[in-house]
Length: 438
Image 1 (cartoon, rainbow, N blue to C red):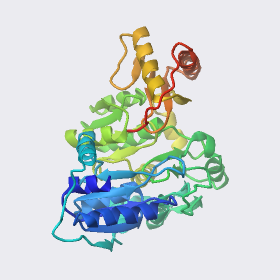
Image 2 (tube, rainbow, N blue to C red):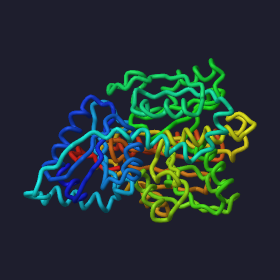
Image 3 (cartoon, rainbow, N blue to C red):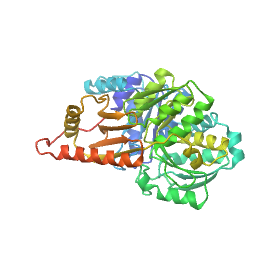
Image 4 (tube, helix red, strand yellow):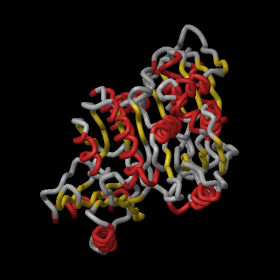
């Protein structure tokens, strides 16, 4: 696959980085060797967060980037994520071009020279300084904010603590050692595994807590009371803060994000654009529309002035910038937001059965939005969305309702409906379909 990606890039240098998984350094060596075989020079950035690699590609003038990571997935998985020369994930259209090169084995043949691999030691400094240039660092330093960071044994360990130190924050670190087995709490931050983060925030009377995933592009916050925030709620807080200074802007988010974002956008004469689920869908729509803000409900937040990719460390900086300007605590600020009641769940399901499930639901609800899976809409604040995961043999179910009671009822109803359809003997099949994609 690297031969196909290198052929797509055509020329170097290409920046290569990796997360802390045990297989990542070896895969990085193979990737660099394959690029060199094509006659392409590459620079090895070592352990870096995905958004650090992406920003460095753009800022340092690389022709592209390759990140070795499986993001939030379990430690036995690994993968390759490619960034174009603009520092943004390559589009799905370009992914198809790369797949065609791979399938036809139509990569560069007999290059005039071998490529070289050298170290790149500037990436983290360039990344952190780029983030600081987007915020009021003087104001943040004056507040002496207290921050708890659960690094989840991931690679934000090389940058987020440096950022907080440069901003004179008193920082408490959890799971700060990079470890590809993710022994602390796993590679994905969830409300169920962030109890230590919440406890540490309360114990130290911190202003906020934050947890990163394995490759550092997503972030989940908890407020000063230790309450874990959904990605939708933290996005509402940051969007409101950013739009106060930048009205008449564009926000891009996925179909499965809550509807309260439209309420916030309307207050600042701004517009929300919805896309299919997936960070590349949001990122590439931001690029084509010059949108200021992008986000996913899973904690991926994108600030267009920095880079149109989800970036956990940039998101932390924006939250610190917000708190430095507010006279209220984070929990108090949240109380002023439009109410947001969203949830999600998942059910094990083969790809083939997932497709049959979606078809069955389309027959039952013919007026639904079928842009991505199926979104069954009762009204703008009461809906269920069901779609197959692109990376695991599961069905994901998202829901929103007007209040917590209605949300629990709605989710329970559709979980039961989905399980009933999947378990139907006339419906079940044995599938050998490979599970891939976003």
